[in-house]
Length: 180
Image 1 (cartoon, one colour):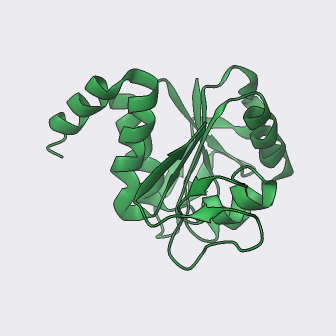
Image 2 (tube, helix red, strand yellow):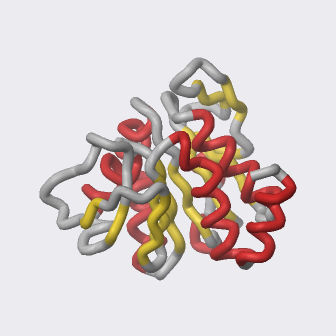
């Protein structure tokens, strides 16, 4: 199972393109609302009904925990202690974590999940003082962590996750089918 977490103010393209690519690659993906109900409002007014609520999620069997960016979406994710505890525990067990745009800086860096690692985030959002080697690439993989730069990287971010889980051939087949 793979979880993509949604909070009010999430960046729509980063969440939905990632879910789309992962599902096209044959990955089992559940969108998860951290709100009080399943309806989540994106940063640009797109309403999405998540598949599940955070209380329904058992991350112990998850392969990926994925965080879209957007503001204040990333801040809302970071303020959810249930989610941040889940991320820390998942990472400690060697589970895969992916975050894009503001989420690497706003969520992962303060949790120490990318300390000493190469990572990327939305330009100008780089969190200082956490020992992160901020890169300029569109997508960066360092160990069990994948980070993406922003909206333009959404499909590449999804393809990278798919390539790690399903193989490069499967990810390339999905990309070709999407004319990318």
